[in-house]
Image 1: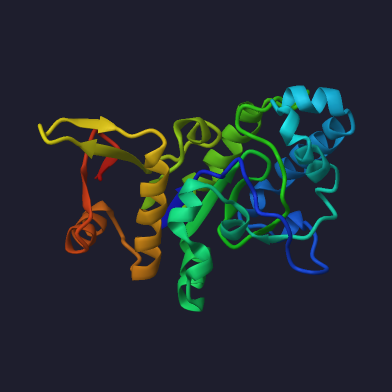
Image 2: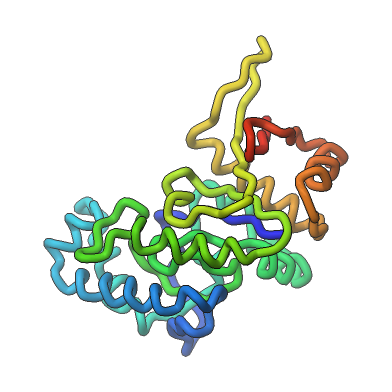
Amino acid sequence: MLLILPPSETKRDGGADGSRLDLDALSFPPLTAARREAVAALAELSTDAEAATKALALGRTQQHELARNLVLESSPTMAALERYTGVLYDGLAAHEFTDAERDFAHRHVAVQSALFGLIGAGDPIPAYRLSHDSRLPGLPLRRHWKDAVRGVLAEREGLVLDLRSEAYSHLGPAPGSWYLRVLSQGEDGRRTALSHFNKKAKGEFTRAVVTAGVVHPDTDSLIAWATNMGIFLEYGAPGELDLVV
């Protein structure tokens, strides 16, 4: 079983003393060569502040992001689930996990990064700035990651649940996966897709799966568990599960 999360634009500073990025230590080793290309391209871009500001769509108050990228390969690292911040990761609250829950998350949760491709929840990464719509010169991100990530996910056995935004799903299609869509239901019974608040729901749903510690072999098992937990999860459109909040 694997749950795939989107990353976050915001990252927590800091990391373990003496640590630094080691691409060979990240999960999904077939992506290592592609990661080296992406890191090298971002490092080269970041030496030109004007070009990087434009390519990364940074505002005046975000210039510190350039400094992060300049020391990308020498700055300290921390686990991906702790590095990313924002609404989804607030809902996940990984810092509250027990050791057993953290171990479960590291084995069954992944994150789709624009810079590193698919990474494990426990993979040590530095703070960086690169989004799915950033423009790396000579390295279109969708073309760069699409086939590589699809390849590693195609070899993954068991249930794969895609909680990424559609933009990040396009960076690495997951063959045979189920896409989680978050909906709200009004008093009249009509359902609408959530935008901003879907991130919180996805974080809280992932937290519930992790803290339960159950490896679900298929969607029937996941839905039955969710029902027992008071979580409204059901089949939606083909290949999709609807989380109603």
